Image 1 (cartoon, one colour):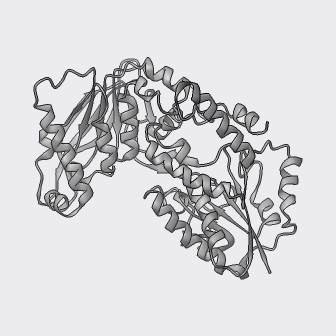
Image 2 (tube, helix red, strand yellow; image 1 turned 120 degrees about the vertical axis):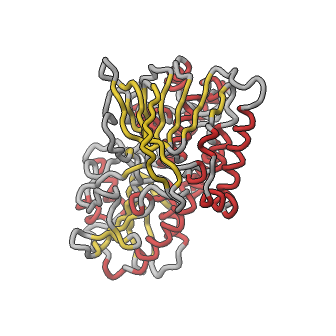
Length: 454
């Protein structure tokens, strides 16, 4: 029986689901799968892209852990594609490769002043508070008033982390350096701006509801944003998610009229119908304010400009307008969309012909949209092609399982394996135990590698 030696680059949910689906798939051949991950630990954005106060979403890790712990997938962590291992190497040792490298960079926002000192991408901020080993340990929280541009879950996560009291994050796996900086944060007002209306937001009802549960934080919404047109009313009537979102907004509007409202030490302001125009510098050349144009419903489910320009004084700006993929050595890349061009997961060369043996799944395949469930169906589509393309797989010179291990050791790559991840996992949980916390993340990469390699 033929044996498929498959490499998967990226050990987040997309890569792990692809491996799991292939192992369970009906096929006329045996399979041996190696997962390569540039970080010393697996799970990708579930570990490094989800706010630490989201234990429900972290439950996804339990399902991913079960897949890895079966022992039928090898994992090589702390291995960077294009540096430690190349496409030519993979062709020598494997029949095919699936890229599941995700999208971790911030999408651009093309307005004047977006690159001023004090203006940041929300993805970088998320990586910092999640203890990503490749970002600085410090974060400059220097202003009492900040702006977050965007109306998706990442924008809400960033806003919540900025507005929340640091002590309320102590039960989570927040790294110590992050807690210390948030504890001394001067932020009192967080302004979230969305170009469209309250019924056109991209965040989930659960995320929104959690905002209103923040201790000692007033939720500020503006009545002028809730003069709904027919399209908005139809959306509320026909879509359960939007119905729930509207109920949350209604509750906040009612609470803002109650006696005693306005006594919290922090405020989270939601501004809708606000099209970003410019980040304005102060005399010191740093962010001083955010200018936007007031929009209005266009009676067709969209918005149009009104010509009314408004400004809010802020000392920092975070753009949360989406994630964007990163190009990979030797692999085509669509600069506009930030994805690997593909047909149902089969990677397309520059001449639009299918590249034999090269596949993609997850956000690097379809862009940063959809939840974890989409990642599974995405992987199924890609895996069906891997299985059916047997005739066009690569012909590796040395497909033995030992060969790639020998290569990494010869190159002096300090790779981590599944036992190493278990060691790091246990170490982090032990750090948290005395404090009644699930874990305390180890942040420095060299320390992660040292613990993982014993």
